Amino acid sequence: MTIKEAQEKVDQWIHQYGVRYFSELTNMTILMEEVGELARIMARTYGEQSFKKSDLSGNLPDEMADVLWVILCLANQTGVDLEEALQKNIEKKTARDATRHLNNKSLF
Image (cartoon, rainbow, N blue to C red):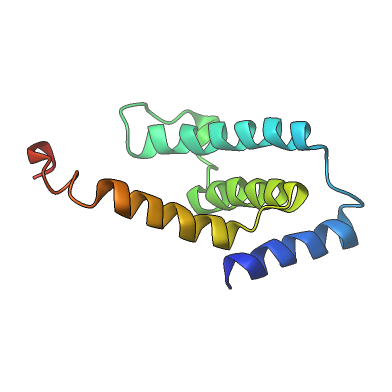
């Protein structure tokens, strides 16, 4: 599925099952909550923190999808074409960082 298709699918779901979008500010807060849940799993899976019993049900792909879901909602609400925005962002990073990382000896 393309990013554009994902945005359309989320919009269809919201209108069919979700009644309406939460406000942009509510969705921004939900995004922070979802990022926190993702961070918790990452810290315990790849970092030094140990799992607590309540953490064992954590599902990394599902938490990443939750973050993406809210970003897609925010893009829909604010009129952002994420596919176009991502392409422009890649072009910006390529122009800015074409040799920067290649010249960073600490990465090798």
